[in-house]
Amino acid sequence: MDAGNDQGNGPGQQEQAHALPGCYRHPDRETGIRCTRCDRPICTDCMINASVGFQCPECVRDGAKNGSSAPRTLAGAPVVADTRLITKILIGLNLAVFLALTAVPGLSRELVMWPAGIAYLGDWYRMITPVFSHLEVWHLALNMLSLWLVGGPLEEMLGRVRYLAFYLISGLAGSALGYLLMDPAGTALGASGAVFGLFGATIALQRRLNRDQGPMLVLLALNLALPFLPGTSIGWQAHIGGLVAGGVLGFAMLTARGPRRTLIQYGSCALVLLVVIVATLLRTAQLT
Image (cartoon, rainbow, N blue to C red; front, side, top):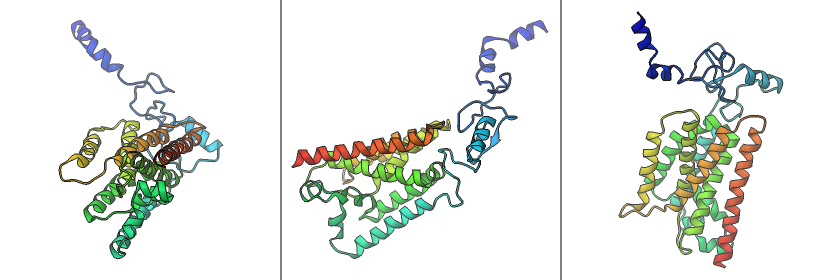
């Protein structure tokens, strides 16, 4: 019996026994569950069901005191019935623009990212119109499929307003990098910048929820490699710009906690938008 006890208390099992943290209210109870708002470890007796994951009693009480007892998303937005409304609207808008480009000859020349048009003609709208424009059916289908599969869950986590701001700013960041690095006479269009922003935010979300990031990283690597394959005409600038902006915004929106969470979330949007504006103005001054 003594030998069995000594073996059971070996170093390997001692490390395993202390692998999980203790509940913040019951330190003797190990748990792998954490509050989705404050990230404190909570045991099964302390966890309270939330719209996403579980919350600790402290956060639930604080929410009640602040009049925010209604269910909230992981990012702090109100839970709504249709969690994919903005995603559906974005897909519908992309489809409508595609049909318009197909039906109206020459319209694509007015909507594409064209650095020379922005710098010399003042066509600032070209920073946003390419985000909703596609010429090839396969390009539209690929981006819209990604928007539905990746954007839908993000909208549920972020909430409608945060998600829309995130999507538009990621798309603008992709356009800004294209404006900076493209040949001034070149053209580009497509929602890839905004879609790659979704990829960046999804990586941040998986990290926040401690999920395996392997499949997403593989998918991201394959998409990043597409522009460099022989015979392709896909621009890489918008991909990188959207990915970086999406990663930054996703991390800020999904990891911010406490009373300043909203300030941090929208402050990060303002900061990334400011970088986009400054980069655009600098490039315009360089070209003119």
